[in-house]
Image (cartoon, rainbow, N blue to C red; front, side, top):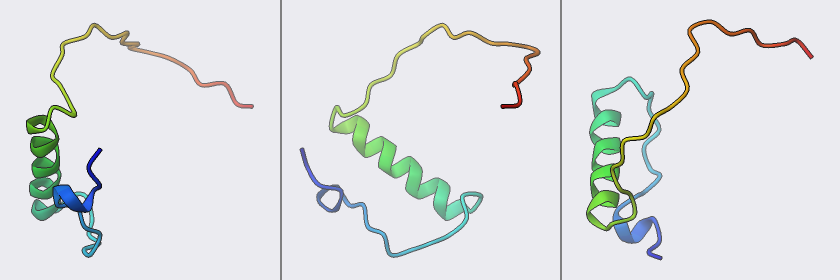
Amino acid sequence: METQQEIGIVYNSFTHTATLNHARVAQGIFTRLLELDYLYSKRQQQFHALNFAVANT
C-alpha cells in the first residue's frame, strides 16, 4: 500500500474544517482514493431513529 506522502497527503497546514481550502483538500483526497480503487461507492440501507435516548452511565 502506498504511503500518505506518495499519494500527496502532507501535514503542513492546520486549519478549521469549515474553510474552502479544507473542502477542496478533502475532496481531492477522496477523489484520489477513488481513482486508486481504495474506496468504492455503494448504496446501503441504514437504520434511522427519529427519537432516541442515551443512557447516563
